[in-house]
Length: 154
Length: 368
Image (tube, rainbow over all chains, first blue to last red; front, side, top):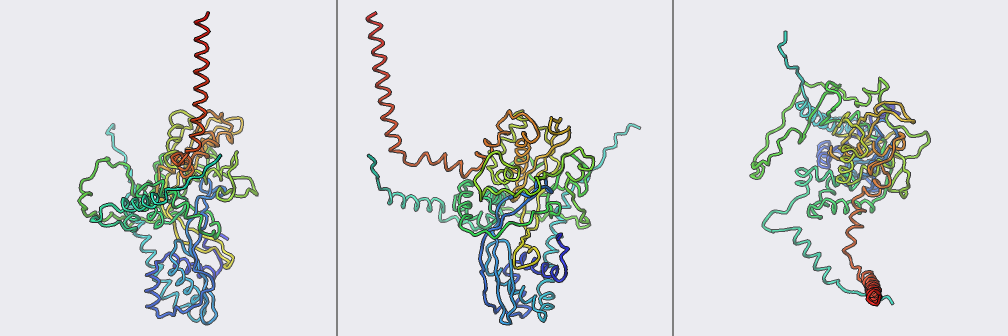
């Protein structure tokens, strides 16, 4: 499967999980509180921190090679309803990843999905898109505009 | 007879206490916070992540403080920490063409799609010390160009590839299993993927010196920077509990595509060949040096004569790791009392034999 072409609703869940993974602990905490969502859940696995080996490709698009490791934290939780949720994120913030797993479980439950989408995923995606746009604009200001000197020979 | 000697516990304890004191320095100066190091000494943090082979800014910053700014010691600390963590898996290969690039320059094409984006570079600065920094002067916000449409930035190698004058991205035979120097002991000859893993965590200074040697004529490779780009790429991991790859977040990497003129050999026609560099964080110097070393190390693959150190795979890869290098060099200062006594005894005996022999010869000459 190519990136971003997974079938619905996997694509939506993947996008939501990506938004949780890239958020900060404080952002998740504040949005959960504002949305009035419960964070009651039973830990099934973790939160635990480990490594993933980051892979690149020779020449950018050739055979894969191992570039180095990165810290990753993962968690699996179960809501009182029985719904299970997972989360993975770079770094070692266990509380953030626990909250992300709770949000994933809450997203997976049909009756709370819209709330999570509207109150958590949408604001996070907006913030992340704004940050990216700012970074893009800052980089774009350093783009070279070449011009040719007129040499006045004719 | 071997006699074990104990002692020094109190001295070691007090030495470590003194180290902690000297690390902290003058108590009237505020202690550094990790976020200050992450934010303001970011390229030092990047070097520790790259050579420590662990992407984690806070840990690298902690290591730098604990090592009193000694980056190789910090890299050692990070490497030791890595071994304490379980491994969850291998990510999908990163897609550098999709990078949110903060910098991207090409020395081979002026007008390439996506343009020449200088980003936060030291290039074109005058390398004059700035006394205003010492006084903590406020820094202006960067300019923005909001109208810029997000033009895609294809890799320069893909642009050149159309004419067939440049070799493809490095393929490896079908069924090749990606090598991993953290799992299997190194063996020579080594495949290019394994070599790149070793180079990516190799010592910047060592790779820089070797890369420089290739420019000065030791394995000359006529290099051009096809492209250097720095920015964030997304990491994805396949996990058993989900039937789609999960997004872990983004990391910053530097990629260098070196393009090298090649006059051809029995194995390959005249064309541009390539060297590749990919390192954690922002480090153009390291990525460029890595790509020059990668190209030089492809000598036997391309049918070139091996005449220089930079082309000698076993020499380069065996000595590129600064944790191994510092361990072996620095171990020399640890007690070698017994070894040295044995050698001292040996030298005394050899000296005595030598003196006896020369006295003997003088005697004979006098007699003659």
